[in-house]
Length: 88
Image (cartoon, rainbow, N blue to C red; front, side, top):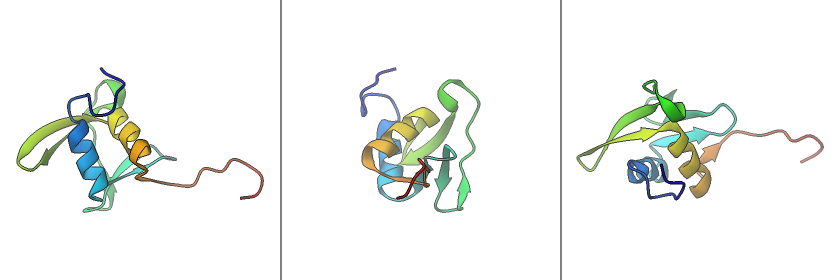
């Protein structure tokens, strides 16, 4: 699998779901939250954290949890507070 964002199958779907606010990645817990249900997505078992099936503009995609996390961090669609010690 390519390390370049936008190069793997499903990257467009992950980007679209994150940028439109359908999904939010919690960087602390590692969960992808559906903003429709307010619950974590259920991933099918597999490598790279498993995968989820989704539809975007009538097309079906399978996206791995690892790719969702990378894209969420890249575009800044993450939530959660990381405590690094000291004052903020």
